[in-house]
Image 1 (cartoon, helix red, strand yellow):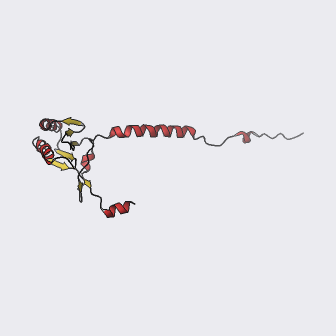
Image 2 (cartoon, rainbow, N blue to C red):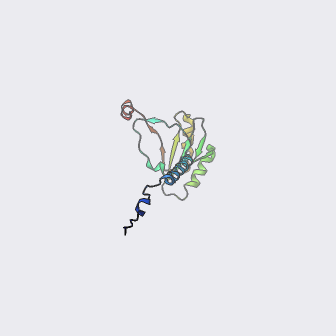
Image 3 (tube, helix red, strand yellow):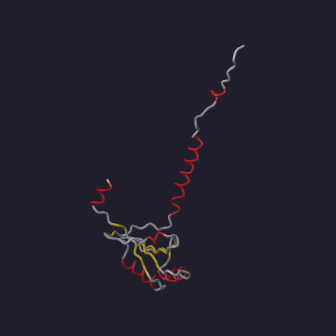
Length: 148
C-alpha cells in the first residue's frame, strides 16, 4: 500500500494583485488635479515684493475678507468684481456679525496708486479697524542660490 500525499499547498497563489489599488490611486490623482484649481478663491494678482514682510496667517483663513486690486484698477471683494462706490456697503454687510474687523488688501505691484488708496479709503469708511496689505518676500541672490 502506498502513501497518498496531497499537494494542495502548491496551488496557493501568494502574490498580491496591486492592479485595483493602482487604478483607484490614479482615479484619485486625477480627481485631485481637477479639483485643486477650483479651490483657489483668490483673484490672480502679482503682489508687490518686500524685503521684510510681516506674516499674516489670518489672510489664509476661509472667513477672511480679502479685497483685490488688479493691474487695470478693477476691485474684487473675494471673487466678485465690485465698483469702488459699492465696496464700502458690501464690506460693512460682511463685517456685521464679526468681532474682528480686519480686511486684507491684495494689490497688484503694477496697479495705480490711486486705485489702491481708493479701495483702502472705501474699506476704512466701512468701519474696518485693521487693513493688512499683503506682499511677497523678495528673493535675494543668497536665497536663490540656496534653493539650487
